[in-house]
Amino acid sequence: MAQQYRKGEFALFLDESGSPKPNPRDSAPFFAMGGVLVERADESTIETLLAEFKGRWEIDPNVPLHGNEIRSQKKRFAWLGKLSETERLHFMDDLTTTVVSCPIIVHACVVSRTGYLNRYLNKYGENTWEMMKSAFSILVERAAKYAATKDGTVMLYFEKAGKKEDKLLEHYFSELRSAGLPFDPKTSSKYSPMPTTELSRLLRGIEGKSKSNPLIQLADLCLYPVARSPSDPSNRAFSVLRDSNLIVDCVLESTQVETLGIKYYCFDKT
Image 1 (tube, rainbow, N blue to C red):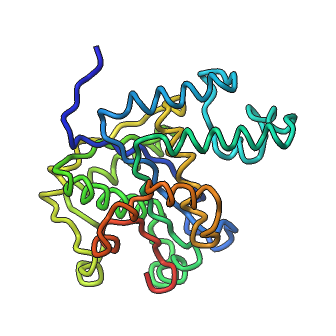
Image 2: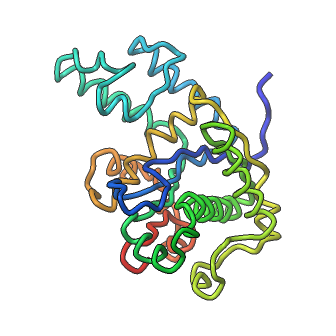
């Protein structure tokens, strides 16, 4: 029997893109953390849509839909390189149609590596936080704010990466629930940070999932286009998500975007 969820119970499925290390020698232009915010009652619908897509293309159900492998046509998706251009376009169109058919809200925090280093490395040196702490805190707080507008709560799921990495995310989550956002209240006041008591109430918990989880795969597919959007706002995948009103900014009031929407952090003066 399928689990019953009340309306307003959300799950945020997380992925990350780029290296979180504040290393000036790293050539990656960004670090991003984000994914898909879904109502718990819609999870089975999404799982069915993704399973049907795999079935149409005879993809083993146990093979994750890994965005990098699909884009590069390597490893478990090397077979895409053997298709005709027409067939490859059909595959990508079918994948796009499947993704935008899912009842999801795409949310993220994208950090400019150059901007982050310029702002913090000279000031804090070796004590500079990894970008993951900033991105995670901002994203999760904004997801909680969004859930609050729907009289809801949020459960977090992330892709397991190893005992050390998993414990770090769990630690960030625990800190957020117990102490609130880790930023200077004076400089962050314009973003209307959520009180700690509210964060503690709205954030239900955090749990690691394997890459075999369909919604973790969906988070991977949706995050990369958003991460690329500051440098390439016309990239097709981002445009389709935006035009389908699946980006969180598209479903917010204009006055809410600055405090609840996707955060582009350390780009210019943001």
